[in-house]
Image (cartoon, helix red, strand yellow):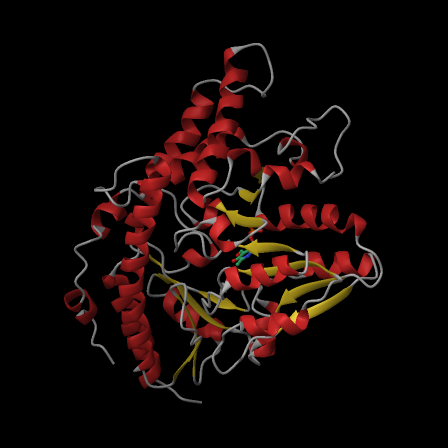
Length: 418
Ligand SMILES: Cc1ncc(COP(=O)(O)O)c(C=O)c1O
């Protein structure tokens, strides 16, 4: 077991100025260790200001003849550009909405319109339920067949090789995550997408958990649709789906008659949350500035900054995993070769809820339960026993917080064993 404080001293973290980054987040001053970022991050002051400034400046609906309306239209356009820069997509292919789940249901409804009985969709047991159930339910409405990609529970990998067997000329859609929200597994999405495309199917990638941790390039992934949620990467509660505008042109979602018929507007329902969208743009600017030495376009700065984030989080995560691995009575789940920095574990003698309460009493925020990774929690045999404890790192966490978590878990390990 790494003694408390050791991680602080042992890591060489000069490439990433975590204390400067932390100072940008007002909420981080309350003494809590926010290790719950996988369920939603805190927001920097620049994001809060962008939202508040939108209201302060005077807000109107978009499409009118007056300046406040022009501002709303500009906010939407700028937000599409920002999400495109974050993901490598095209601004005209950025669909904005309340969250990933809502947008995925909407796209499942639209995409399944022309599925016929006997058509097939492939979902995975690695995925959050938001990238499973919308497709399973849409398939049931069309008498389509659902095929399951399985997780190897001994490694928590989602082998891409199995897709050869799962796919056929009847496959219409493959839904897969870019990273598991509980065990962090990052499957070989480009290989899975290539296999889908080889049989003429579309690939819908859940990027909600991956986006805060990696350099995203929707084209390199082969994602026909890439879903993400800004509240996982220091933004407000807004979701986005990024697709090729030419693909969106071929789809006809349900919409109001007078609402825009253009792409991507026809996929968006009702009045947008303009102030929040300004916050999304500010969040992308925040991410792009995380490597202060990065230069060039915002896309280039995003890529450089996310490379720095990946390296920093990787170091922090190695310390967390190493410490938990050496702690008596802790069982760690998740062994994939490529992972987001998310630890899922149980402590013998304590329910996950008890562990989370113990940590909360020490001002350490973690999650307990199945975290909506319904299928994977079931495959790992933990769904009916309260799931596990999730400690998810993001770029504003620091070694001192990891040390606090390890020390608090070590307290449990030497206490009662039922
Ligand atoms: C991997 C993953 N996918 C999808 C979702 C659902 O996202 P939203 O809350 O934006 O609907 C979550 C939320 O935790 C998630 O972690």
